[in-house]
Length: 632
Image (cartoon, rainbow, N blue to C red; front, top):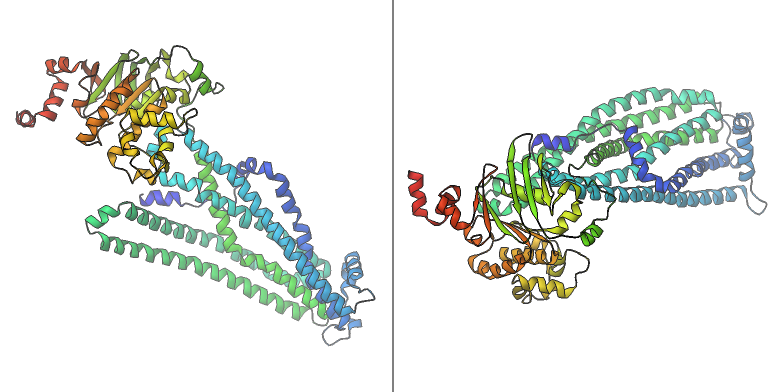
């Protein structure tokens, strides 16, 4: 991955984007009651957060008789005079029943408040995390389903690592936003407003003096936001490059060790790691500066309260002002973490919705028709294939196929040959509707593929690729691929048809043998045989073999040729091969050159023409003549 690509991948957006949050609402809507309950818990939680200082204030002023500094309690301004009904309601609760002493009752109330606050806080945090995980579960399913519906051309341009990131790390970032970002920011702002309101209700004069440093904090927060944004971007860029380096090293470990590149990789990794350390240190410095500014502001506020409130308020009032101001400043200390979470989450949301907004270029016209039903009841399904004036280009008008036309009758066996890049594999991609032609049309049993559901097309056309992909799971699962109606006998019959049963029954658990990732515990030939068995089990009308024997040794190829003949029986078969020996007995051979069909006929007819096919044949089977041709 290039540096620019990494930078784009790790780019950061706004810390708050209303447009993106609105797009997340459909995933939150099913759980709006839980979300609403979570927000409603804020009110009792806030009251429980106010209560401890109020209890201690009451104890200091009423139980221990603390008046203003240097004055008796009776001469100080009482909290009750400032708060009116609130103070009266609180006084009724704080007055002890006759069986409790005043101090004992306050201790009991404090313990009850602490336990209730802890329990409610747990429930509040649990609901926050629950809503986030439920919503993100649905979003993850939506992304996975969307990825499967995208056309193949999208995956040619979009790195696999990025797609994995969308469905994993980006989703986790959004989930964290709900549990530790968005909801926490909302409640923090509400708490700060709540503490300010309560303090102004107690004494607006003292509050004005105490909040005098808040404008300075606002300026500090703005400066921090601007500076830390660059620091966060740098850290994410550096860690992304480290991840890329580790991934490339592990993936290419064989090459690394064979060419003794270990020391160079270590040197490069140490340099990247040092840059990552420096980036984190810059981020940590700004976080430390913000924390220090908040700490200084809080201490200055305490000094202002003590100085301005001297001989004005009771000792308990001093305590409640100091406690509430400390709680007021507490969210600002965590601003760095919350800002990072929100900014990262918004960037993840933007990337996720950019992916979801990508529309497939290959779409079904008849979305309301059941593909399985169409494949089952459609009469006359026999496997006739036709290309009519097909033009195709992957990029703009850089044509890979130019005016290609041919027709195959049901049951015919044909082959396509040509040099690398002549367009052979592109024909298969069009026939299986992984792409659609820009001009012309492809017909299956006389029907334009654009009018057939993609799932229907791929049930009627089975493809055996050169690069065999096996999933983690048993051999039986890799042959059947979850197709309905297949039992163990059908899977074994398919394996016997292509001569795969012989090596399968020698495995420890036979058809239930678990394969490693991509079938790494099988040889290339064995993996290819399983792909043949998969095609047999598919039960299609048209069979496509794309370089199907290129990874098989000569001995295995001799065994599998019988299976291929059985596989082709009763089906329209299209073979693409570099080994001309494997296609000499087909009904017809088409020769592609620079995207055009330049010759077609039987093996003998094409040799007699002494054209492109003849030259390919001589280059492959007569090296001495090939050298003579090159020399001439």
